[in-house]
Length: 320
Ligand code: BDR
Ligand code: CA
Image 1: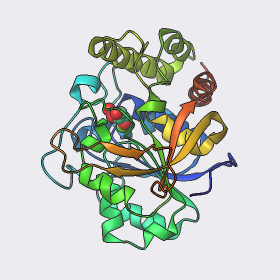
Image 2 (image 1 turned 180 degrees about the horizontal axis):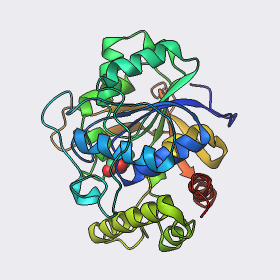
Image 3 (image 1 turned 30 degrees about the vertical axis):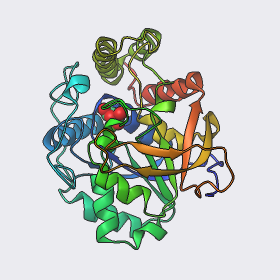
């Protein structure tokens, strides 16, 4: 069983993302609470051009100096599948976004990831979109598997959101997810079970808006759009506001005390007629169950996690 992350020390990470409303929040938290060596982009919530553009916009809003490299425009197998029904066509609908003022740093995310894994001590990869870039890096340079500290990802869960069994990031590229979960690397999984505990309630959006400045206003507008989409698409009444999935994969490293986790064996279904893209989690309470390969997050202190988000936004908000 992998040792549990428990120190809360500022982790060194590379964020692989597909912004995306919740990805944007993850970038804010990563910029505030980690040594962020780079951001890579992948097709997911929107086409690659859009997710890359959106990452550049968020970098500008934060005013941070972090390299951004674009990567895969589609999954290992088949055509790309997007999530316009949640994030809008642009991937970041709902706010007037400024035009990026800084150029992209490179278009070869896979080799950038490999270089960073080889040159950085104790690096965590934090993928919060489809796992295509990470799988390509692991396949191209298998040595990185034993060089990095681990992979803390947003994806999977015991239920689905894109199909009845599959969560979007895994569903969008199951073959890539299979490469990651079978890599032998230490894996921390923020799946839907935990991310649905962390939502953009009206009170939280109002608190973000009250930070003032372009960053807070933009993020509040984005989360208002995102939560409205969630409201339209869910009918159980239990989910108040959109689930802010992605920052939890960052906070699992930077604020591990906010989470409960269990060690489980997890595999990815790549062939099932009804279950393609499902994370199959061995939850049996029997002796002799499969050896865990994953730390599955089961709960989060949502109020404290939101305080982390709010403080991070405030930190990057220039005084008037
Ligand atoms: C995941 O899919 C995307 O829509 C979100 O950004 C998140 O990474 C949730 O299923
Ligand atoms: Ca995402």
